[in-house]
Amino acid sequence: MKETELQVRGIHGGVLITLPAVSWYLQRDMLISRIQTQERFFRGGRIALDVGTTDWSEERLLSLLKDLSDEGVCLWVVLSQSEITKAAAEYYGFSTALPDPSKNLPELKKSDQKDDNFLCLNRSLADKEFYEHKGNLLVLGDVPENALVKTSGSMVIWGELQGEAQAGTDENAESFVRLLRLERGKLSLGNKQVEFTPKHKKGSAIEVFLTKDGFEIKSLKTGRFAIL
Image (cartoon, rainbow, N blue to C red; front, side, top):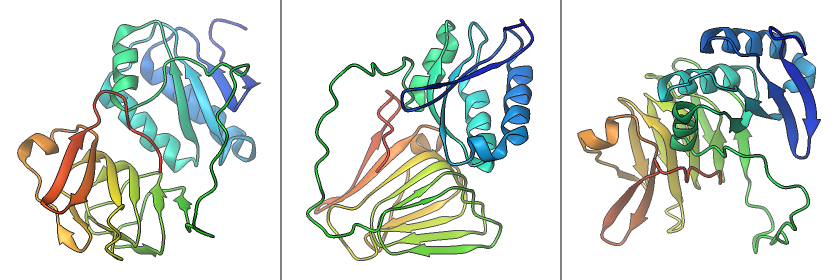
C-alpha cells in the first residue's frame, strides 16, 4: 500500500479500513470518498477504522459519526496508536481493539417475546419529520430541532438530539433511552418529561431509566455506550 492510499479488507464481523498517515480531515475526506465510490459495498455494513498515529478528538470523531450515518455505514471499532484518538473512541463507547475470532462466542438467547419489533433507522431525521415506531428503535443519525421521533419501547439515538424524542409510550417499566449527545432537545420516557441539568448537556453520552422514584440518568463516558 502506498503511503497516500487507504486499504480495505474483509475481517471477521465486518470490514477493516486502514488510513494513511495524513491529517484527520484528509483521512475523513478519503474515507467518505471511498464509501461513496463503493456505495453498494459499504451501505448497511460496519467498519473497523485504523487511523494510525493521527489525532482524532471527541468533536472530530462525532463529526465523522454523522458523516458515516449519512452514508448508511456503522462505525464498529477504532484502532489507533494515538492516546487522544483512543480516549475519544472510548468516550463514545467504541472498542479500540479487534475482537478475537477464535474466542468462543456466548450462545444467543432467544427473546421470550415472539417479536420485539426492533428497527434500525439508518439515517438522520429530516427537518420537521415525525417518525413513529412500535417497538425498540435505533436511530443512526440526528434528530434535528423541529423533528419528533416516537417509539413504544426503548430508544438509542446514535447522534445529536436537538428536537424531541418520546420513548416507552406503552409505559413498559423496562424501557430506556441512550443518547450519544444531548443538545437542546426534549425527551420523555414513559409519558413523563425528563428534566436534564446543565451537566447532562455538555456533550456526554447518557442513559435514562424510569424508576418508581423518578428518572435515573447515568453518564456513559467510560465507554459503555451499547446498542439495544
